[in-house]
Amino acid sequence: MTRRRKPHGSRFGVLAVLMLAIGALVLAACGGDDSTTSDSADSTSGGEMQDATLVLDFVPGPVHAGIYDAVVNGYYEDEGINLEIIEPTSTADTLKLIDAGKANFGIADGIDVATQIADGRGAKGIMALVQRPLGGLITLTESGFDSPADLDGKTVGVTGVPSDDAIMNTTISDAGGDPASVNKVTIGFNGVQNLESGKVDAFTGFIPADGVQIDVDGFPTTSFALDEYGGPKYPGLVVFSTEDAISSESDLMQGFVSATIRGYEDVIADPQAGLDALLEENPAIPEKFAEASLDAYMPLFEAGTDQYGSFNTDDLESLSTFMVDNDLATEPIAPDRYATNEFVEGSE
Image 1 (cartoon, rainbow, N blue to C red):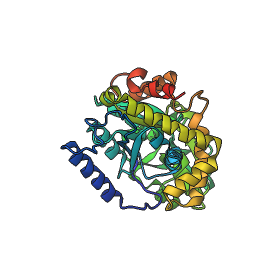
Image 2: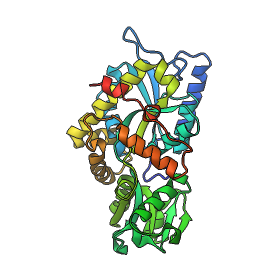
Image 3: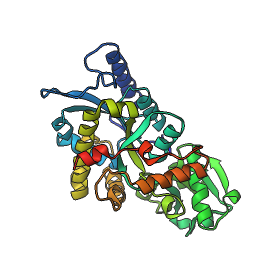
Image 4: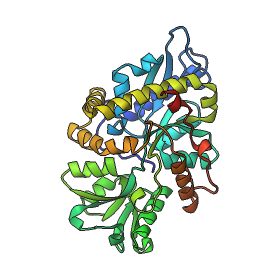
């Protein structure tokens, strides 16, 4: 589920920061010594720091608390990594930058990573930030919808991304409803505003982010998560790179994953510490929203896994089946093509 809507402000002009970062990366690729491209991101030695770039999936938010905890506590520096975090204008930017080798790491919805692979691109996951899908149908509690089937004949907003249709159809069908009866409208990434203003009865969105934002705005919500209504359990957000970078820059991959896992283990053990780190680095995020959203994400970080960040083979197979069944991929994606647990296991 590609995302663009921004629920809160940022300290910097997003496009300006992104363009400056890309410019620096391109210049470095032409011969500079500080490149973060895959051509020059060799493993460090002798205590030298290595520049690396992480492109987020969206604006900084509570789901990224472990990353900012790792920044504040110097975990990336401990691994010899000078990490630059870039905020994209959309998930499409993240996917393009990684595919072009202009950044080392990206974060994207698990379906978006699968789509890249299905399209023949080199994307491959190196750790899972959350273990369950974040998407689903979000409604207002006052509307009285107790099941996705109650949306028969109602107006449902989707972004226009193909996976949104799959999410809507799956949840409604599983509950015994008829997706064909729904008045589906394409609203882009303005689901929060459209639901609050009554223009739609429901919309497809990220429940721990969009749903929480609406709750914080004073409109209690009832949400129907994809994996609770016929959809697969799969990693909702994935840190990914490319097959080529993973094979040629294994030390960098290992260092990044190890540092990031330390950050999220801090958050899992002490959510307030993670919240403090997030707000220290991103003071424009409203604290009330940040606290409520992080609380919603907490059960999703591990969700039954033995090791934070690992990929479950059965979950990846379920995602592959979902992709094929909903015409999001023409053939199955093998779990070992989708992601590797090499670096998560190396962090133990």
